[in-house]
Length: 283
Image (cartoon, rainbow, N blue to C red):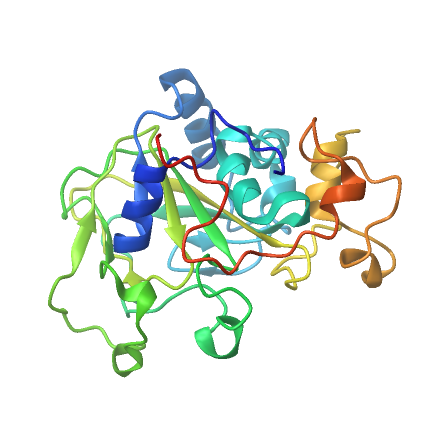
């Protein structure tokens, strides 16, 4: 059996909830000092003016990984990497990194949508686990719907309600994801959701880190990110001169897991069992 990040990997009870709802919450995964540090970074520089920040759609800033060394360290953190590694093993790569700054009453687009690869044809490659895993780190309390809650439709990742795509009306069963600063949320990429405006006068800060298997084309290039001599970061970003290396990693590539046997693991494919084999049924 391939190695796992046992402390931060999946538990059976979490998988059951994830399968049912499409999202789970890990409370207080980050301590108050860590939250304050990340919050300060997000609020302390002008993302809009930064050349690296790119365009923003309602406060979602992409191409931001290179703006802070702390961001680069974060994507290697086993609290975030662990769940993705349990899915993708040594194929795990970084797909995207977003800084979300929801200013009060400034969300212009609140349409229902999903973030991952379309179920047709991609679900044929992986009927049981998502081909993209999105992980949120919350830096602001969102304890009421008026605080700018992320709204989602529980279970919608297992059906295709395309008739609501890009529509803004309320839907039966819609649920507000209520979190505290320091919580981590793990999202199925096919989950239908939408942003809401923060109406309590407080900006809402969060980070969303997206992982995928290396053979899924990344959303960002990460070419300008300083690798800082970090072998795990280099492996996650996979900024190879030859794109073929994304499916045939170079022999000198450092493993993501310290106990990984690359000769055994590089060929691992995504499982197709209804329940991934690595989950401990007694946990």
